[in-house]
Length: 206
Image (cartoon, rainbow, N blue to C red; front, side):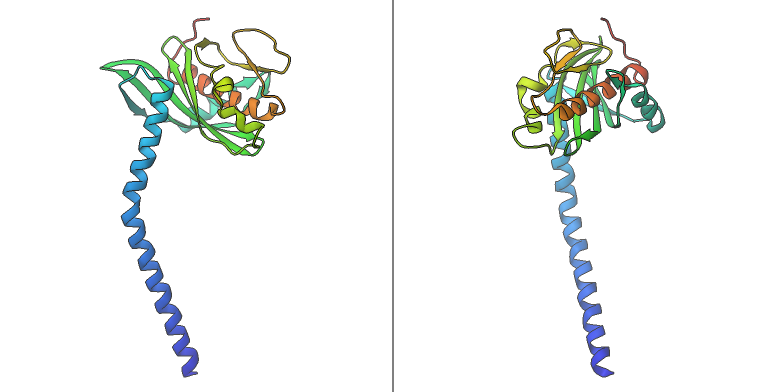
């Protein structure tokens, strides 16, 4: 009985010490981690609207965001995405556009998170892929400029994916062998556009 009690006390002590150490490590690292995440976010924002000199967070209305996503589509197909964050892109005191961060859940390898820069006239200024885990040599090519730069400088209410090189201001050439990834990224862009148009009060001059 004494041996069992002794072992129990030892295990309890180890658990308490481990928990205390984990708590100390968390307190030490949480601020640097948060700072690193904020820096990465600001760099992504700057990438999609380089003309801005600052970005101000805009509170995301979850209910309105869900409705906006519900109205987004790709060639008639519904979009399965979540609006994560939004920010005003400022040039001095003037708002020149918005950055909307979206997670699309329809990637071949899982969720794909992107930030979309949209100017006041509805032009997609650029997109930045923040998180993606697609197949190497196929879906991961979405991170190559040849693909993601297709969205930049275009005005469209929404984009569609084409596999046959169809032309049009709203047409995006699919990655060869990675149509699912192409549609997931496009779905994220369309969700961001819908949020911009329906919640942020943006317009599209086509």
